[in-house]
Amino acid sequence: MSTIAVTLGTDRARRLRAALTVLLAAAVAVGAPFYFAPFQVFQLTMVLLYAVALAGLNLLVGFGGQISLGHGAFFAAGAYTSAVMLDRYDTGHLATLPVAAAGCFLLGLALGVPALRLRGLYLALVTLSLAVFLPPLLKRLEPVTGGSMGLIVEKPQPPAWSGLAEDQWTYFVVLAVTAVALLLARNLLRSRVGRALRAVRDDESAAEVMGVRLSLHKTLAFAWSAMFAGVAGCLYTWVIGFVSPDSFSFVLSVTLLAGLVVGGLASLYGPLLGAAFITYVPSVSQDLSEAAPGVVFGLLIIAVMFVAPTGLAGLPGRVPGAVVRRLSDVAARRPSGVSAVLHRTPPAASAPGPESPSRPGTRASEPLTPADPETVGAPPRTEKE
Image 1 (cartoon, rainbow, N blue to C red):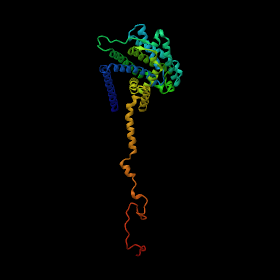
Image 2: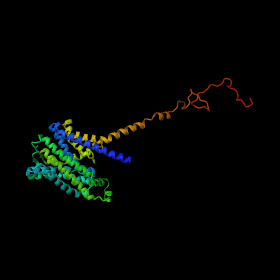
Image 3: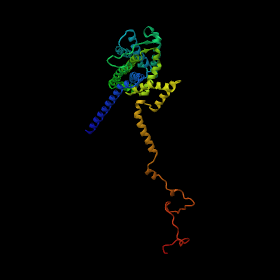
Image 4: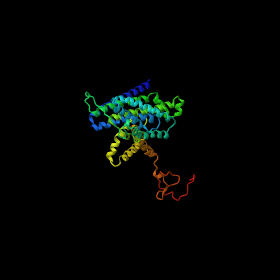
């Protein structure tokens, strides 16, 4: 009974701690645009939309165990869907969001079917070819996409009753969409689909024996991942107000994958940390070295991977463990006082030298007593004497 009570108390404390963390994060997120400058608010907005894209990539790579280097193509598809609807058909901004999500979901399903027979590097090459192929295709479709010149669209305008600036209003809209997307990803991972993805990632043969349909869940992993990337691309169009094929090269796909690895694979907080990394680190690299910011960016990635191999999300749990192991190693190398006394060699136990004669039959540690002068040179006494 006491064990059950302790377990319930621990669960209640964990839930209370999680609720307080969420409330604190929500308070900071809501108050941030009123404290920072417009450019800093813009950077925070970019962090939020990149977090949505990385949350989808985390479903595929972190929990699904598949490799994708073409996530930038889904990002571009969502961005251009929103831009074309706003420019050609003059629809509202919110109306473009479900269309971009549904279109990218279907695109992910289409790519997931041929990817069923591929894995590892072969799958990575197929997805990379999609990321390389899409920008030239967008340039060819000039009547729709605007070609190399791209499309300029209007940003969301704040309503008069809000009293907010344009950057603040855009931030709150993106914040609301990001919160819903991250909550959906969390619930999806805790559902039957999430458990099936973990089983497929760990062992496909065992998962199939347990009744998991590999083809269905692999295809759905691509579809969900593409949908999140499409939503992030749609938000990108709202924030930037301009899209062009050069903005969605294969470098974007590599950057997204690097951000997820740095943030932490298979972690709920990894996408947020990775999005902050790929948003702020290039700016810091540019300030440190205007000649070679890419070199600084790469060195920072190497440094983070050396310090936190499991990503920034696993760093809080890694530091206490490293400290404990270090203290244990130091204690193992330094013997205690009792063991030091037991292992100490007495000085008299060493071999006798010329200045320290020893008598046979005596202990080395006992001092030698002087001989009786009357008995020196006398024969040994017998029992009769």
